[in-house]
Length: 116
Image (tube, rainbow, N blue to C red; front, side, top):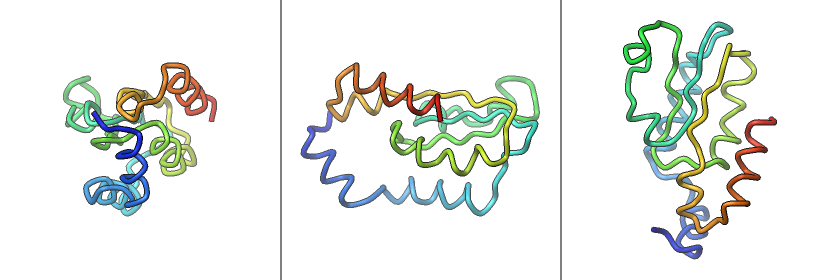
């Protein structure tokens, strides 16, 4: 588990290469359409792979990134919301807890994400 100091150092260094690569992929090839269902989350979402196969549909896009937290998802909403997807499913908060945030702080961040 990361300490608060480790989290601050990681934030100062910037996102890891995989995170940057995924964000660049989403920017270069936006898959979100008005009929889309977006899976927005962390490693559990990204590693879910093909959500269309799992859910037996053809309009689900996987916007999961390993290691993402609510702050990262909040900033990534700009890649999603302008396209007015039909729904956004969130899997968030787990990595926030690893940053030594209290349950209340995680709750507040998730609430902010939902209300945006």
